[in-house]
Image 1: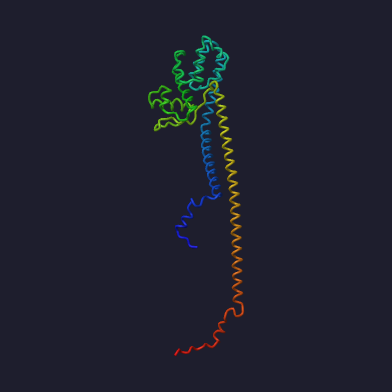
Image 2 (image 1 turned 90 degrees about the vertical axis):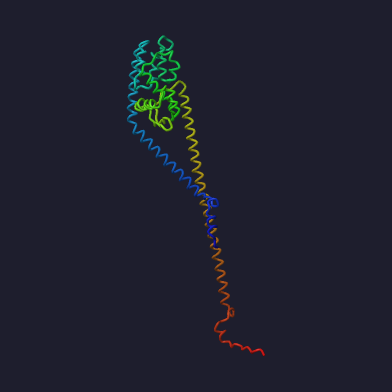
Length: 316
């Protein structure tokens, strides 16, 4: 039957013809495939970055381990006030950023509560504290040398990067006692990035430092439990995501089966209609054959020509 162009357009409108279960299933798998491709692309770039920076990182870690071992042995051989010089040397070294091993040395732990306990407090400051902590307690601590001041500011950047991957310039200038952006960016580039303790991007337009990598500091007392809880939460989230993906796959399989069943039913009905129409057409054709084959059913043309035609008399 004829349909005008408007009716055809209307019948093809998405709102009147919602996607079939098969199309929904296909759309889900396309989305999941694109997600997987993007995920593995990002993972590939990440692995490339890790491999590219791996040699530098291994060199820094190796040097760090050697320095820790050196100062631990040096501190173990000293006691009392003699430990002060060792602690000052360790906290001033440009390549040492971990101090928990020195805190665990018995002779260092014995400083607590004694006349030389101030050196233990300095070591604890460099292990767990920041520049702000030093300023608030500088009256009870010995004056730091320039190398110690620089080291403490570097450690402050690492502490800030633990919880925030985007550090505003205003916050950094406040925490580091820096007066202008140029000085801050020079510090981040020359004293942090070149030192290998942090990597990131300086965004002058947004006035922030985007952290891509930051070296870890010594664990503070009680921090281990918090880290375990964070990892447990991440594991739970990953498990829930995996369950959700499995449910989506199961739903897609069910919809695919329902679509196949529906298509089979439609094909069976269409076949039945075809058979019914074929039988009806055959019956109608046979009926016409019977009508035309009966004697006298249809007058023969030659017979009609042989009959004499009657003349009509004119009406008088």
